[in-house]
Amino acid sequence: MKPIVCKFGGSSLADGNNILKVCEILKSDPNRKYAVVSAPGKRFSGDIKVTDLLYECYRDVTEKGDCSETFAKIRKRFTSIVEELGMNGFNIAGILDETEKQIGEQCSADFTASRGEYLNARVIAAKLGWEFVDAKDIIFFDKNGSLDEARSYPAIAEKLSRCNGAVIPGFYGTDSNGKIKTFSRGGSDISGSIVARAVNAEVYENWTDVSGFLACDPRIVNSPERIEVISFKELRELSYMGANVLHADSIFPVRKGDIPIKIKNTFRPEDPGTLILPSKKYVLQGNIVTGIAGKKDFTVIFLEKSMMNAEIGFARKVLSVLESHRICFEHMPSGIDTLSLVIESRYLTGGVMDVLLEEINKEVHPDYIRVLENIALVATVGHGMASSIGTSARLFRALSEAEINVRMIDQGSSELNIIVGIDNADYEKCVRAIYHAFFDKKAE
Ligand code: ASP
Image 1 (cartoon, rainbow, N blue to C red):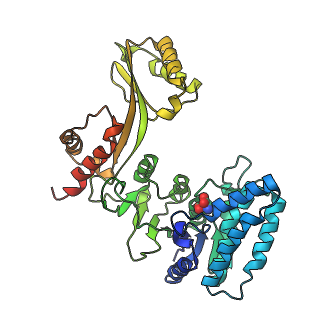
Image 2 (image 1 turned 90 degrees about the vertical axis):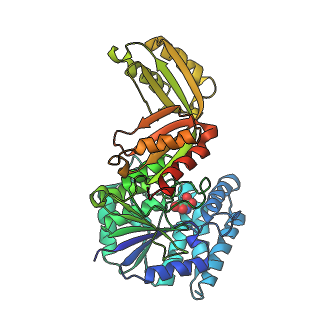
Image 3 (image 1 turned 60 degrees about the vertical axis):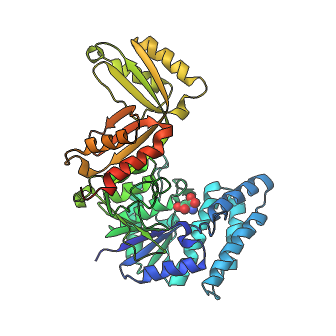
């Protein structure tokens, strides 16, 4: 039987009581052999994450040469975790002393930030009676700062094949100079995915404090449906458009290894969660639409020119203006005489817009340029849309009934999504209208 790799994060590991739940989950299935853990998260709203305290320690060391005051808060967190776990014989004081000393000596932001994961993994391994496997010995970065796959995967597989239960700290590894390097924030999800790929796991279980992905933002629609099964491609579309549960980079290692991810809730382990499947294992689900997500604050530059379709190099010239200002565009819907560019508004502030328009005018001499500001994009995503007749009719009927003016439409070439551009002010109304059109009337 292939092993299961579990990653625990968020408030799952905020205190000793939660860690006990985590231990129970790990022990309840003999295939759950490897756990990747984050640093302790927030215990209540307004609480500070251990990682944030560690970044503060680093600032203290660089500014004052000493971090003992801030480190005292970290000391208190881990001391009470160990007490709550009833680990009286565990020498947490000694490990904390050593860590504080190293933070002062190393004077490195990455080393300091990584210690939350390191300390938590040491405690949890001891509680479980499993081996502590330091990420610095098995996860390696190359000289460009990317994961060194050729070195990391065999090292992980070899080391873990000799453990019958191991706890690995997430979020960091070793760079090409032998120093500790972290992933970007929230990066323990990536570590979990790398470990799962290396041991060719049956599934990568990602345990958080939510029972999976919801079909849309619960701040907009009251208790939206949970997504039971979603493909990696659908997930990518939805997370790009703002739905976030997992670190965006964490899907790549497991996706390459065709390993499913399961999102589970530490506080409701019996909930089925959301299963994320690679293409090979994905079969079409009953739903037409899997999820809806969106973002506000885009600008559309609309260009019109007669016979644009016959003009060689028109789009290239327009895009090279963007390129020369290092601005990326999100979508480029086009017709025979029209072309629109959808760009995040934050790139166009401080006079950049005027410069762009001037240069575009000079390069391609359009008959007409119009700029639409304060545009929101809403993506409706689902593999089921391609094979189901009437999907777009249903979507646009819902928008027209809600009296929403659609300013732009873009259907991805994979037929996996339909994106509409609407006024920022209509954003919430639009998400609600699409949700109700596809999820309330399922019986239709
Ligand atoms: N502890 C790190 C952070 O706060 C990494 C993680 O939680 O995944 O970003």
